[in-house]
Image 1 (tube, rainbow, N blue to C red):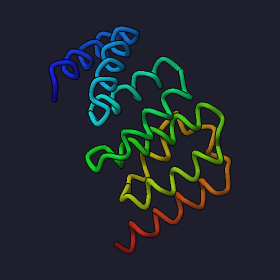
Image 2 (cartoon, rainbow, N blue to C red):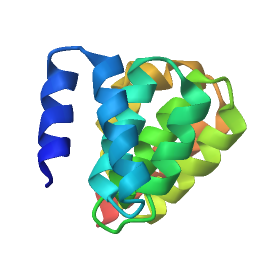
Image 3 (tube, rainbow, N blue to C red):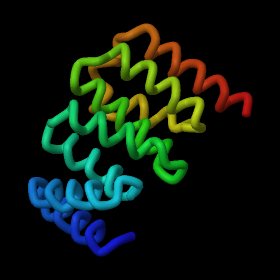
Length: 135
């Protein structure tokens, strides 16, 4: 992890999100394959409620095997908050395919509240629960 990422993480913890964003944008501009920077940029932009930009950063971070699962999950959260419920449900399917199995987190994550009444969301939860019982 680069010094810039360590600095950005500290800025995020201190809720200095605009400063973290500047640091992370500089990092991805100079090192487009810095998956740490893309991941934390997505998190930062989501917290700033700049969902379109956050979706791009999450998508880039998901290109990395290290961050794929968490970045896809974060992408689904961001899509939900942006009102793209169809996209969020599709992404949650990818999250499941990538190995995500925490049904309790899906049931309780407040960012997913807008999806709770969706039949596809309930089907996903049921099928994951059944897989957990079988596996």
